[in-house]
Length: 307
Image 1 (cartoon, rainbow, N blue to C red):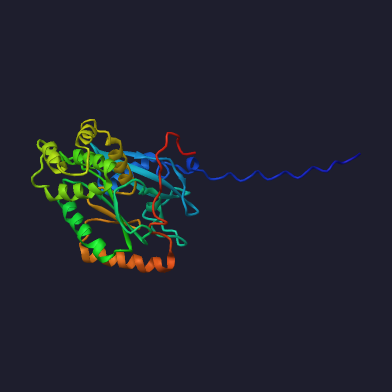
Image 2: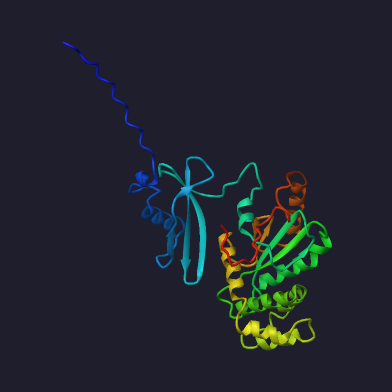
């Protein structure tokens, strides 16, 4: 009788752990549980709408990441959370690449092409300011920046202005739209407009803004008829909306918010701001991984979407 040897059975391949597999009832990968958890952590009321994005690989092995958007009426805030692959731990914090500039994530989201700017081209430090023409704290910060940057850092800093009009300010958005119209015609006059709007902040109202604007424009190198048409038709509304969306993407929730080579700051007195800029200048002498040559994304206007 012939005996046939039985081939050994192959071991079943190990099942890969997936977010769905780990998303038990109390798992951080269970969106329902995660929403309830972060609501409790931050004390968000029921009327705050919470949206949780998909879980995607993070820069850190073993961690997934998701973006949580919380919104109430016209206010919104986005935060990135990290969840362990087994769903047992939730991390709320920043991730810094040790081999690159620590605020590279912000630098990638900030755009500076075709934005109002002053200072030295090619500077090692880029200062991006998100501001609101009706905000009194923005007025203070604007004066600090305008009075001190060029005088103290003539070759080391480039400043960019971004609009972030707050919804509870009744003429701030109109002022942002008008400022963009001015910038379209004459970038140099924009900075005159910038200083004028903040200087006259206490006199401007939603009812008299247009009258005050035309008073400012008198004698300027601006086609006043064309500019009024731009303002009336809100031709720059989309630019303002993009600036607001960009601010939200980098964590702007109030004004003024400043970014020094990607480092986010709130309303900052001059001595503190000068110290931070000096520190960044010193860091860039050896790191050379930020500043005008490395900072921010350049987006050229095009009818064709980026591939």
